[in-house]
Length: 96
Image 1: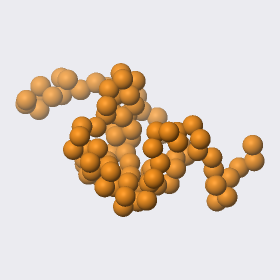
Image 2: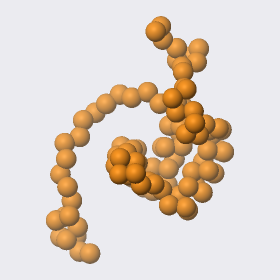
Image 3: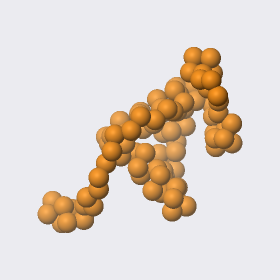
């Protein structure tokens, strides 16, 4: 595909800056995965969300293997079953 053909396929969007709080080790894995793919963290998160919204896996088997390695490196022992049970610890706690 030529550069002109790729430019015709690009979708212009309006992006906004946001401040989100994420679990520290999860963020490390996400940043490492974005670096591995040579994309921004925002691009990675957008892609993951768009795939999830369509009920599709955002990563192929090879990428999931890399994620497993990165989770081990950064000590991320959480999985999807933890998603609605995460609470701030002492360092990041806020009054409810």
